[in-house]
Image 1 (cartoon, rainbow, N blue to C red):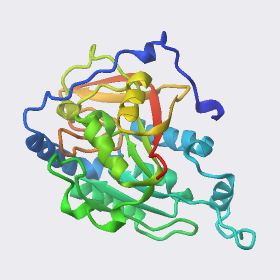
Image 2: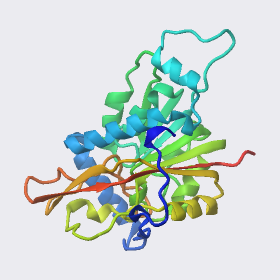
Image 3: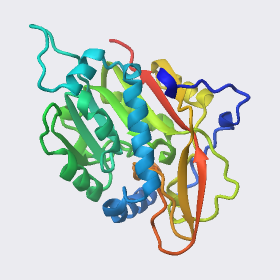
Amino acid sequence: MGNHHKVVPESDPRQAPQHDHSGHHDDAATFTETNRQFWDQKASSYNAPGWQQNLARTVTDSFHANISWFGISSAAVAAAADPSGSSPEGTSPYRPRILDYACGPGTMTTTFRPFASEIIGIDISANMTQRYNEVHSKAEAGKPSCHAIQGDLFVEAGPSESTLGPEYYGFDMAIVGFGFHHFSNLKLCTERLGDRLKAGGLLVVVDFVAWEKENEGEYEARKTISHRGFTEKGMRRLFGDCGLVDVGWWVFDKPVKVEWKVGGGHEHGNGHGHGNGEGHRHGHANESSEGEVKAEDRWVCVMKGKKPEA
């Protein structure tokens, strides 16, 4: 795993109890609409905070240093490093087709785009998908063009119509970047994402290890959070209950700085609200010019689980 991988022992404070706040939203549809409006408003300034830019760089660097953990071959890495190079006759490196769910402006797409054959983003926020498309729909040497649509996979009655076309199924990988702690019904969300994978496809979740509520204060985006992070035990149980196999977990060997503004907002990264009481952002700090800025170190965890072969 390189020097970004660390197994966290049960006695470590990073294995704090997993906080579950699902059900604290009275109306899933209302909560989803609140999230949509909130992140529509933040789309233009989402990547502005310096600490959030540092978080994105840290994730990208860590993932690239450990890219084989995601099933991406050294040949694909070499091809990404030299797009003009040629592969041996009759061969081509494996490049996954990826769903970037709760894509925001495309932090996870930026990370995986050099190694992918195609990336499609889905987000509940129309303004976020617009920002995504402004950046990632442009063709670049050695990188696929990417696009995002507005949609919601997690509506209890069924995914939104915009996501039902055949092009939104059969992915090699589905990734959620710092959105999972805003999803209230984790089992439904995990199952719906698994439905979009081909047999043998990989679900990847990047988020925070469980953090404590103490001294958090009141901030605008707090209303979008359903879980204060995750534990290895809880995530392994969830993935197993949803039928995923070969589950893996790792934690960055250094924490990342997170800032939020008490009386204003609280930033933490790349997400937005989706149905069933889901939001997703890893950032909430630039919401207001007033208020006390708080900061703390949080640990980033990465989970994966494979959809069984047919």
